[in-house]
Length: 203
Image (cartoon, rainbow, N blue to C red; front, side):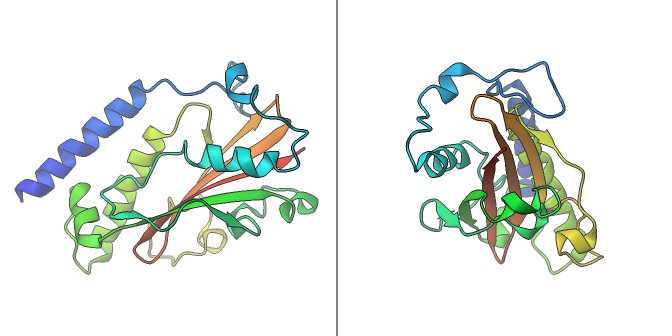
């Protein structure tokens, strides 16, 4: 019981620290009060044919890691052929196949991961929902302020059972006016893995 109480304290500390974190400034479709921080994009050479891939690999590593105890990464950055289907309605049809997608895959032990967020690891859907809800809260608090969190997808759009937690996949959006790109950050659970993706396309 003590370790679960400790887990709850850890959640509160992480969320509080995340809100104090000063995020990078990038213009978003929702807020017009932020601007692209020049130092972030000045080093991007758009004459380089691989600039999208290089930028993608840099940015995915700036996303928060798995918001609970994990055992490690499976490899380094993975380049995906197309974005996750959850973004299909958000990316223009003529841009979807061309979008650049980078992904990090975090492996975790369920018992340790659940305990780190103050939840018992039992075969109980209510506990699974609580764990994912806590993970959503911690990740969303940790991501920097350049990102706008989108509303949750329907069960059909999100590819999840009707009895599961409604928050995942997490989807965040922003625009980078210096690079003329539209960008997405997503987070989703797999089989004892947690995936974070960075996706972008040029307007």
